[in-house]
Length: 290
Length: 314
Image 1 (cartoon, rainbow over the protein chains, first blue to last red):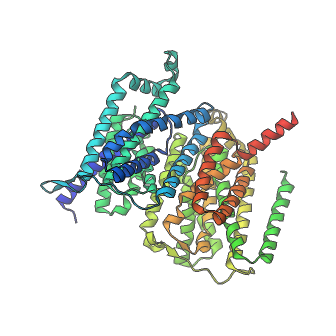
Image 2: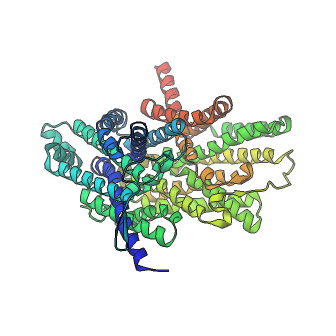
Image 3: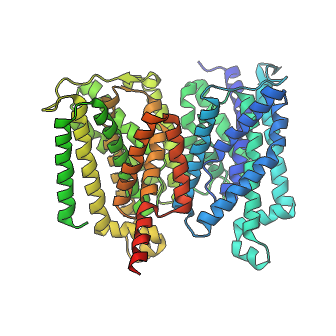
């Protein structure tokens, strides 16, 4: 039953998968981890990213990753608009906890149903020159349709990490997370900074969506499977810590892949929830919490 | 509504229900009202936690599905009658509500919301892998031959649902006006202040998650007999969860009558749109109504009516 090459392959493809999970979770690490906005619609935006990549790939033959990067400004603008509504309707009146959550839930549902109405529930996929190729090292296989998303995701994560820690705006975002009042005293407008950060979080969904559809076919309700995953990753990673988020994503990817290799793929969706519940029960501040 | 008025109204509704089963014989009417009543119980149950304490449950569909699958399991394993499976579903789902609440409600409220959302995925995975209750393929349920003194089984199911719905409303009304209800309202308004004033917040929250879970299980228990074919996709349908949030939000969460009004209004609208236009559009419309109501009228219809009355008085 147990064999070394099966094990090695499960670890390696789990790492590739986990690296990709980082791209899906990073937007939430900013929005939920730093701004405390529980955007459960984030995976739905990732699916919108997948469909954007799908549309431009099938009609014009563009590379999905390029489409994802090019779509970032548009997603950013949508994110800013959504934050404006969220702020005006809930945050200003202190109703984030009930109404704000229900708002994002409704948003997620509207996005999913609209996609179903327009494109149906068929699985969609993209074609890129590299998607069929596989690199092999000994008995470890590296399929390019997993390796490319892994590398792009790591690049995105590194870029966001540099942005948050090195630039003025990035530090301002972290300041909002730490002490809003102090920031106001310094003469900065927390709402403008949060709006910028929320836009950034949604913009990462464009790239994550493109990566998702490179890995495998996508249909509108796939996003729901990612809700448990992304929240498990962000909470386990210690809320808002980008390095913690990356390590948690890799851990979850490997665990999920182990479970699906040795117990069957139908059990994999339950892993994220188990991780989430265990984290909440044993160490709610996450592995790398402050 | 004062005590006797409420009970008189309930008795009148029950009598009207019996009269309805005697007079009407088109099974569509019973199926349509069954669907509305099922949504009503779910909405009332959701509001016991969401409206009274302010904690969001996204996993309504999971509780509902566990109720339905409890019936399927007990029917297949021991051939138990419907009344017994309803009780068992209440017990199982109440325990799940208690467990999830105990694990997450000690932390921030959002964790409870996220946990309920993810719980649906896990329970669906479990059912998908459990071949005794049909697994991913789903399972058929035969409609039993006896249906008491009613003309058909669907008429009996309609009456069962009506009784359960009235019971759910009575429980929710009782809870909201009792000591527990005042404690829950205190939690909703300011949990820290409530805790400091000696309100046993965790215990009260657990009471309401348990009652909510049990009620949702009860709503799901007769479902296999109603549709006769159940698979995980239909039982764990996200639409059930959206409806049970949208209906109280649209009706108004602060009063026990809010979810009832919301469910009757939205539920009947859905039945009409499904028949006349299309069921996909109806699903989209609920999502849009939910978002519009919470952004523009966060107090729901009850809140709008109250505002109107205040203006007229002034």
